[in-house]
Image (spheres, rainbow, N blue to C red):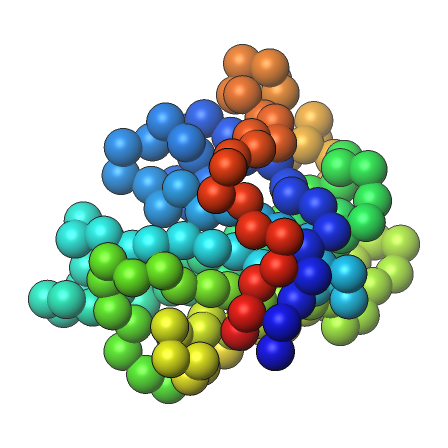
Length: 168
């Protein structure tokens, strides 16, 4: 299926998942689609392995947790953050290193205080490697951490490599 990219979400400086200056991070880019899903593009490297040549399961969980947690901001002015209350992951296939991977997530339920979502990690051949679901509390960043947007370089960082559509 081909997803049309509507917009790109912010990256930061040191986040393990999206931080562009974290030398050990995934450097994930997050794209909102026209059908209200969020797709993360990332490439796991050697330092992200569990078993040789395979992504560590905890890092697979981290990318899905981050992507589902970001889905609350699809089509909205950023300002809400998701604090994970519950998270469940199922591993279906080994996740290789050094290839482009995709995590696709969406909201399944939302009210004024909480939201729930699901997501999958998709392998280059289109197979699903892991599925997850989570429940999150909506909070402004000021109640979660001392996070200065400018100091943490929280911004949309456009690139010539940004796609206008993503094939899954």
